[in-house]
Image 1 (tube, rainbow, N blue to C red):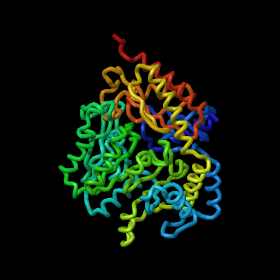
Image 2: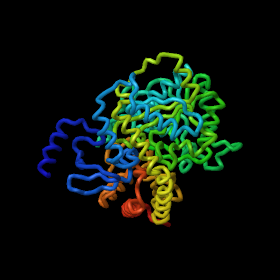
Image 3: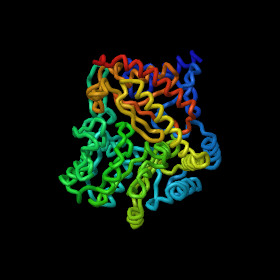
Image 4: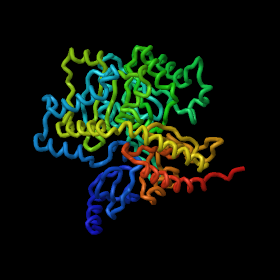
Amino acid sequence: MESKWARLLELDRRYYLHNYYAAEEYSPTPIVKAEGAYIIDDKGNRLLDFAAQLMCVNVGNCHPKIQTAIRESLNTFGYVWEKYPTEPRVKATRLLMEDILGGDGWASKLRFVSTGSEAVEEGLILAKLYTNRPHIFTRLWAYHGWTEAAGSCTMIRKARSILSSPRGHVRDVPGFYAGGYFVAPPPFCYRCPLGREYPECKVDGKLGCIGLTERLIGAVGAETVAGVITEIFMGVGAVVPPPEYIPQLRRLTRDLGILWIDDEVVCGFGRTGKWFAYQHYLPEVKPDVMVLGKGLVSAQLPAAGVVVNRKIAEFFEDYRWWHTPTYGAHPIVMAAVAANIEAMIEEGVVDHAAKIGEYLGEGLRRLQERHRCVGHVAGEGMFWVVEIVKSRETKEPFVEEDREAVYAGDTSNYPLSIIAAKCLEKGCIMGGFTPNTLRITPPLTLVEEEVDRGLEALDYALTVIDGMCPSQP
């Protein structure tokens, strides 16, 4: 096995255009198998995936129902263009629109594409065509993808396809931003970018960040804004909003006649203990456009989609819409999507995620009590964020740039880097995208013993960070 992987890694280094690492620091861990909540390396180590890789393997790897559906569909289909309906597409559509969304009373039509970035692109096109308006509002620290419009809505510099050198040089993609995208403040109450304190930030009950969002939209001109796009829980930015934020934002967009585009690529399909994160705020909060991905098929094949309300659906039905993704509604993928949704329903995965998420949250709060480097814990279901600080009293982060960090130069002393390495020593993969913040997003199917194993690894890693905190007075 060792000689085999020596040759494979030689070919990998020679021909694959790698990201995340410069060639001089590329030292990969070959993965030979993935099953359930684990990935297995070339030495046979079973690594517990406490991040669901990219927050996407919701029911775990190699789910037998999904694998069976893929194998069976391969006996019937190769490729069928989405111009022609197939049974797998109809089945996946019915499951999503009737069994999951049917009771919420807003969803009318959906369309499938291949990736979350592609779905965001389509959602923005839909909004602009429907309203005939050019402008979109996004938020600081948002992540919506890496293609042009989705990337223009992404407000974490590190996640915008930049180059950053181990020697400190940084290069952005020249001319990356499309025009017409504007930035509103995020609902980050722990360390508010507006310098406010929650809940004292509210004026007549309205959050400060909502008030500023309203003013910014007014400055641009509400009649020129097609939509506001938001994640409910910010996956890359690692922000969990206060309970008032989403209802107030939805009310604001409705009052101003602007579409709300709900990006559920990360939060959807059980991640927050509901099928979709907006359902925490029913009946007041319902999207106009909803973007899907990742958990739609538990990342077993490329799949994403967009759901629209009745008014938007009826508008598009009056036109021929010349918009053709080559792999949209691919029949093999549709079979996997249907099987994933059926498995989640049959196995009660969403209810389990809510229950085991409470257990995970309790464990993280216990770690907060034990470790002085843990400043803040927030989350719901199987989506949690942990803020790492030098001092709880001042909330000072270890890396001053925090969510604006571009990961240039030496990043080995970043809390996230240290914690990830220490957790790996204990056979656990821990994730995140910003230097001072952990993002805990395991597969939804974990049991208590696996949660305990992840928490033990994190406990071990946080002890190291505690030693980096200044001495208490």
